[in-house]
Image (tube, rainbow, N blue to C red; front, side, top):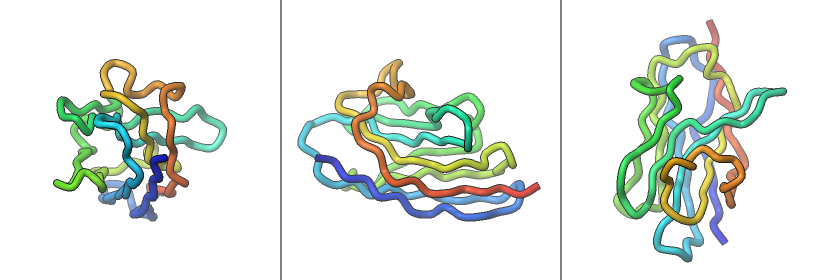
Length: 126
């Protein structure tokens, strides 16, 4: 069973930066789609960014392209979401997520996510 633990949330003014980290353990398959989702109160959870642990392209929500970067360490146990030029609209609870198999076109489907972290709050003030 995969376990995910996030860290790195906080409060910043607009234009600021934060880096979220997700430490994963318990891998039992050769390929997972690992990524980040976010959810504001009363809204649907949406995909932010993702990558396949087996290699390949990264995926981004259009709203964050050019500002956010997803990356991982060489051991593949930790991945990061570097968030630059943050906007008030980025204020959300951010969740680390994992699903079995490579990401592909369904990287942001809530229905395919098997494992969730507990979430970390990001607040951007105007």
